[in-house]
Image (cartoon, rainbow, N blue to C red; front, side, top):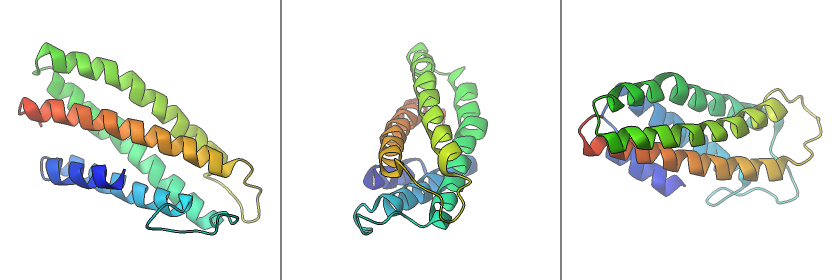
Length: 156
């Protein structure tokens, strides 16, 4: 995921200030995800759960990223798609509901862990974090498909 993110940043960075900010937020989110999950190059004791503060910070980044997509980037994509070929418009119509499905998973994760207090039980945390990771990977793939389609038609 981190490698794909770096490729996306190199490819679409500089296209628009909002996209640059969003790609930066996406990268920060992925780095924090890898830290929470203990994925290389970040490690954590497999028996220990992340600190409550780190989980809350991650949830804040997650909500910033989700919000920027829905309230800035996707609006821009939709407005650009009106000038795009029919295939690009259809791609957007197909992909936006799939992205919305991943939003539900992200919101559920935030609802479960975004307001944690120190010492609270984290039952099922690793499983929910793993499910969120899968959803984020899909979401980023869908977003990249949209950005690629807009780039092909010089609408980005």
